[in-house]
Image (cartoon, rainbow, N blue to C red; front, top):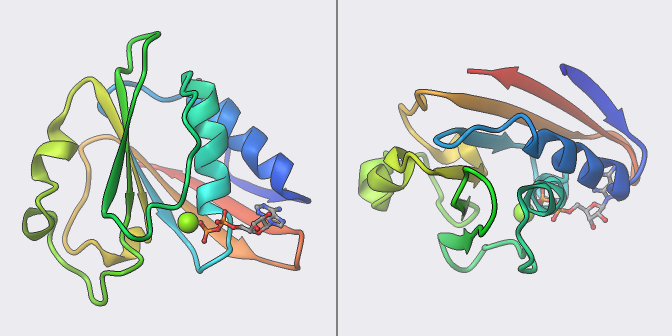
Length: 143
Ligand code: ADP
Ligand code: MG
């Protein structure tokens, strides 16, 4: 999986859903892209694929939402949104060091460009680009 164009939000959700099958416990997913680029939409599909029943909202007003998973090897999805962080900060000052060390969880970070000097041990960077009102370009890079 490398560069993909989706033609509507359902296709982006489906991409997330399929991506869930590639994830391993301990992975971090760093999501990049502007407001409306599709990061949360992708995360909704991902959550569905991980067996999460909760509604996935953009955690814009809280730093992190935790979703427990009752099936499979991945026990939790930590959904982080750094939209309100104005300039890049270190994960330590956000109190997220332990979150990224959880071996049975996956961490999904929206606005990952606001993390300073951070490279997860394992995971993916995913870049979302707005093309038209309904088209997005999504590029996946394995770490
Ligand atoms: P972000 O989290 O990056 O700010 P969201 O996923 O919350 O973005 O919002 C994306 C918006 O764009 C939603 O309103 C969604 O319905 C719309 N949209 C239209 N086309 C697409 C597409 N191809 N992929 C994802 N979202 C799309
Ligand atoms: Mg979002």
